[in-house]
Image 1 (cartoon, one colour):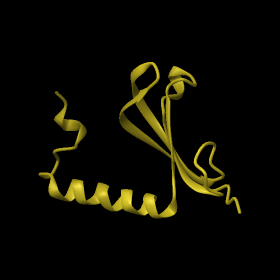
Image 2 (cartoon, one colour):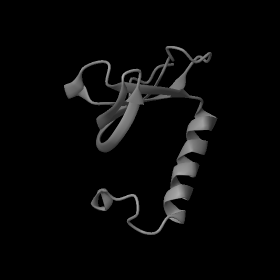
Image 3 (cartoon, rainbow, N blue to C red):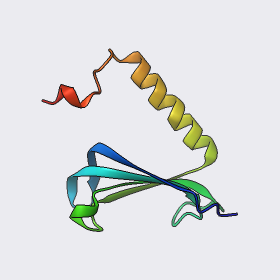
Length: 92
């Protein structure tokens, strides 16, 4: 069953698509039918830069278990890093 629940957030970072690296300014997260993954439903995450057109998009389709494992991995990596290390104030 599709929920049509979509969560959008502004983000800062970079993504790599077919044309190389591009700035990422938005993420969209939703549960729906996947385009490619062989499952009935997946958690879908799109990282994109709407100002750069449709080619500036990286899409991920994850099972529920994989999505929860990813959340845990992100939290673990951030908790293990020194405070503020992944902050935008740490630009090179």
